Length: 294
Image: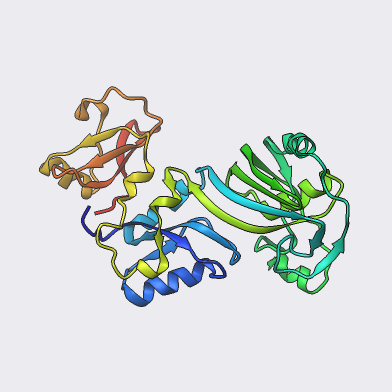
């Protein structure tokens, strides 16, 4: 694949870097018109950080629907204010889970659609301020629970006092809160000690690029259509492409389509290059351009 003007860079975010640190590093080398990241990672986390470049930034919303998998380590026996190693220790206990069966039983409470209270030290906004701003000032504030979805939790190892897991979950799931909640369920204390995002929708950690290798992006930029795995595909000849790029609309009869009208169509030019989407206007009963890349 040739270097693309618009596309996705999969970066393996380094430990102790913020997601914005990664953006600044890329900006120092490349003068993209637009650039942003999908799915913020905490500084202590590593793993897949998708970077969207130029017109691909139109597709940020698609990442909200992707499942994510995290390789997680939780250490039992103490707690911190932040539920991870960044915060001050605020509790200790010698009570630890004795059997892996008790851990397996507790984990069942976290599968499916669950209510989760985000951590006090988080960037969620309430009343015009971030939650961590209230926490740093020791201000008490009500934090409402949120519905999140957990598809699967798999134990990788249990070497007392450290539990290693892979968690597959929806956007909005806080692994730090999960670590704290699991420990409480097991009648102990615990904190998150390591976290790596190893899967993000169709992307795997093995496909990501280390930050020191961003100075050679040849063949490393992915076309944005790589996130549109299940969408139907349609190729346009030169004249139809020209009409599409100029905002032309189409009927199903024009395009000889026999598709349901509830799914966007991927559009390619006659060189098989992705140029955007067609979406169906259910009121006006025609197909119209959406998120044009070219």
